[in-house]
Length: 184
Image 1 (cartoon, one colour):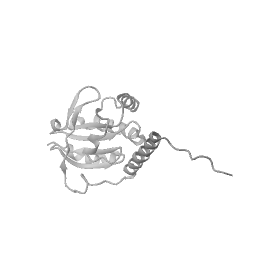
Image 2 (cartoon, rainbow, N blue to C red):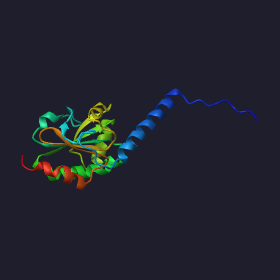
Image 3 (cartoon, rainbow, N blue to C red):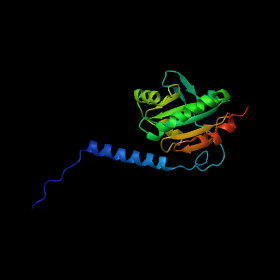
Image 4 (cartoon, rainbow, N blue to C red):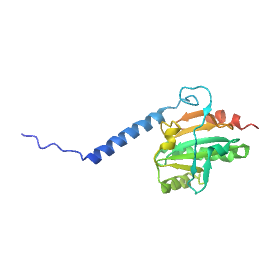
């Protein structure tokens, strides 16, 4: 019996497959991490938050530098991320509870189209979240994001004081956000 001709995978499909495997691996590694890394990679002290500004999903503008004096929770998420979907209602609850005390929650949406994001926000009841689109991931890279979801706490002086890879829970928010909301 002779073997038939070898089947070749078209170059475009092979490239797409490699991209999916690579991104999936990076996301899985980021989601697997339930530990709390220091505020910034390897540095146990607060570090200045990278710039974060631009047009929001609803047509407004956001500038982290202009939010000085507030505690800002930056949550990196995507509509295609199941854990992100689970976490969004908790973030909406935190915003309702703590925004009168100076908390601002900003979503950095990674590699999504606007309609997918709007559908996710409507589905999870978080339609009023300030969202900065990051369609090519450059903002996330500047923040050192390793996967989604990933959350950063920026204090009133613009310093990253906490970082969480993976899903945040109420206990994490109480530990890292609530104490920073005391009167300035």
